[in-house]
Length: 291
Image 1 (tube, rainbow, N blue to C red):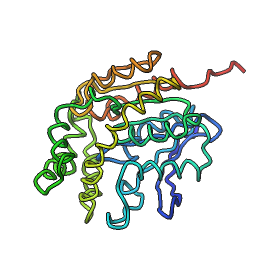
Image 2 (cartoon, rainbow, N blue to C red; image 1 turned 60 degrees about the vertical axis):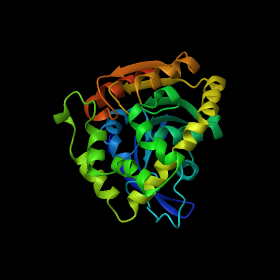
Image 3 (cartoon, one colour; image 1 turned 120 degrees about the vertical axis):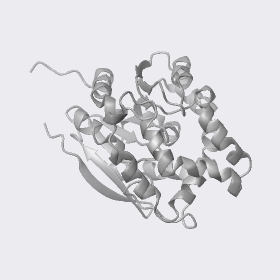
Image 4 (spheres, rainbow, N blue to C red; image 1 turned 180 degrees about the vertical axis):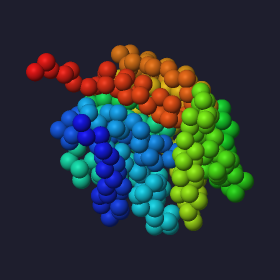
């Protein structure tokens, strides 16, 4: 089995999009969509564990990771635009059917792809990614509601704390069963990219634009009910940003979904990659023949 991860780039709408790729392209594809404040690096342990059964593609959004990060006066940092560039990568790579793995920001990116092209999406893997008001925790409500209502230097302060070193480290450690099992490279490497000139400004643009996702929740929920994609939910139950009621809410629209609780927080893979890989294979891997 070749579990090697390849690190590649493609040009989408004139921008360089970086992506990690592993597995056999003839196998079912999983499109892995990362969250804030990180990049496709969050999947570096999961991908080798799935490469024997799936074709894996994990892009960095524009402005994240190793993808192009144009200044905000030359690129509109909105979730519509992030999703458009992931959709463009799907087309460049010729992906016609894929399972969406979505964490945090991966939800609003992936659900946009799903509602635009539902026939291409063969399933959901939802990991602490929200599509219901009851899933929004008190922490983001307090931090972001003032920004959504009226953006000023004062209301930006809490948003900037999300992408400060303290905030990035908190994202990675909160709810961890064993904090010493969480690799500190996560927040150190993420923060090095967040600290590039101008980056935190456009990250605040995206945090402000997050209100556009909440406005789309009813549309996404209607699409869930209509299309009933096969769904696995793996959820860190100690996440203060996207709280457990948000995980349970999916079951109202996707009653056949499998919900797996993890003793973790906003991020789960450092401690639970092997279990998550096993759950994904149990739900989505093709049965092996006897020949």
